[in-house]
Length: 96
Image (cartoon, rainbow, N blue to C red; front, top):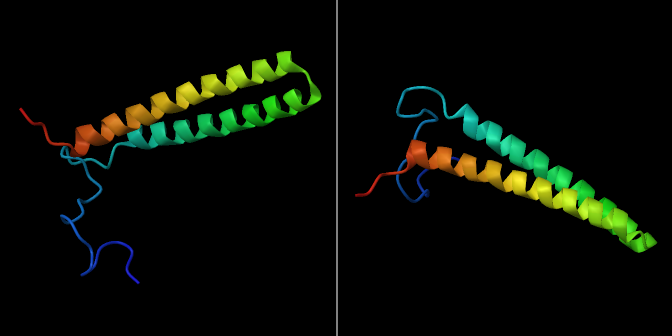
């Protein structure tokens, strides 16, 4: 079983992992993906804490953790957006 291409792969041939400038693929994009993942993990941690506090009836602490989780979500989405923009910049085609 071939995972990367082969005779049954559809679409254009895969591009090598280099940018048009000749360097390796954007390390910035990779870093944004790692940062997004970390923020998603932190958000999940705070959502779990919020759930525990809700179950105990401590709504003030639950609200605090829910708010922190939302902040991590916003950071994760920002990093994901930057990673997508970097990808588009390297691989997208301008249309005018």
